[in-house]
Image (tube, rainbow, N blue to C red):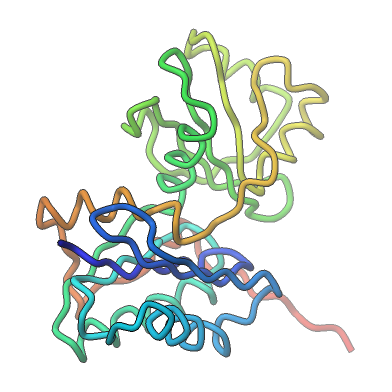
Length: 229
């Protein structure tokens, strides 16, 4: 039996879940936006106590590794690495976009479809990737500027059905004026349960990160915001 603590702080949502052999046991999601520093350890404590287990009973910690919020990813990674260091547990990382694509394929299973998870990266930019129905990457995570040519690029894949989802997909609807080339899966958010199936597979395969050197996958350099008084 593998009991994995999954963590996702890649977006405004602070999310944790426990999964046993890849099946969701329990989860906690805080939607109050950007409260990761104060909420994450509390959510983990509540999750563990609710299941009447001890933190040392988990088999591994999995982190949604980005891309996404620079600050959120650093907080989540620091907590995950701290638990792994303290309890000598393996660390697993899963791309945030791969987790979203997996959830999209669960919501809209389609052997003839491709799944394009997108995260808002400010302005007309998104983080995106393309996956098939088996969660294999057709195009790996990348930073992309959405333009009117986007639908023609997607059409070049010559597949029957295209599914878009995540916080960046709204930009496609606005910039491209229509979504005739694809179906937008609404209200898709970054939560820890997106990655629990993938993290279990990696646990079985022994695909672990070096706890000392692991860093989140930011994909682009941090852009700070200047506060104007």
